[in-house]
Image (tube, rainbow, N blue to C red; front, top):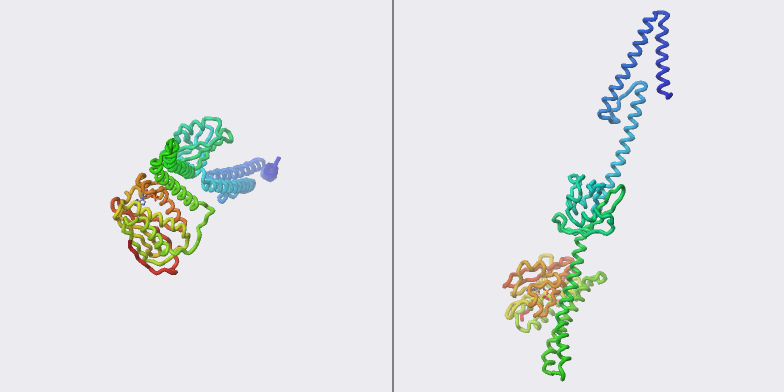
Length: 442
Ligand code: ADP
């Protein structure tokens, strides 16, 4: 018997004794009536507390726990304690859940939890982005209804989930995903997705690059090989054939040499272990030298103008800048027909310093302009080759400018000419040191 029972029975016994004490004085009827009245009052008090309890149970909250008398005080106190404990473990649980959700939301990988029947139970924001899902709208949906991909459905059915799956074009998206299915618990599954679009792009670029380099080298090698075979087969040695083929062979060898040099320059510019040399470059002197080289290269086929509007220098690598500016100038010469005009300038534009090469040559259609700095991208392949181009010049220019925190601006109109501008930010520009401003024409 617990305390409540004991105390209740003692109280009842005391009340009964008090009522029956009336018996000798007032008679049995009065004593029994008094006892009945006491019992009724006790029942009414309990009913009142039951009603309080029922009312409170409709919206139980520790703050509104009713006050009770006697045994009910203990009942309400116990309920109050229980509710407080429940509240605290609920808030602990929701804090843990919140932490988990925050961690899941911060995860770059997508996570989808599937039940035994491959229905979505939950997914994180990365999975929503990857698969175009909505964790509220799609919860309870069969994942294969939403992600209709035969390979994915096959993998989900198969028992060996080990290898990740590469999925493309899921629900019309451009993303390339690597998806791993991990079984856990009671036949539940976790679908983990990773965005590998960028990796794929780099991999494609690497493959294309190797294919392009091989292709570029194959043509001159085939020509050289062909000539060498013909010469070896001619018995006795045909001096006329030799005289005709040697210049062509030299041409092809030079082409390969230029290509290899440009490739080495690019790889040097890209190499992480080759930081930019931070020397003060006397740009006006450099541009003047390049102008004289241009005059020699053009061999009087063009009118070349030099405009040194600024005597500022740059902080950076003289070799890299020579290579970038030289490429822009040689392009202008190569893509401007005889009689055309080329203007080379070095000027200030606001805070920035600008090296520009303007020509009135063949120009470029707008759709090609955004792709010109890609390796081996050429508007007209045969014209580029005929003029000794490797298709890497503007890729080198872009790299050099990036390393100097500069940018390339291209303006061009087919048939009217082009302007290529290399712009450098103020932190790269240094005030004049030696050379005064100058202008020249050839
Ligand atoms: P390439 O060795 O073929 O000249 P570049 O990377 O230097 O390679 O240039 C890429 C392409 O951009 C060229 O093939 C050519 O089609 C175009 N291009 C570059 N400069 C000019 C220019 N000044 N005028 C017209 N087209 C140009």
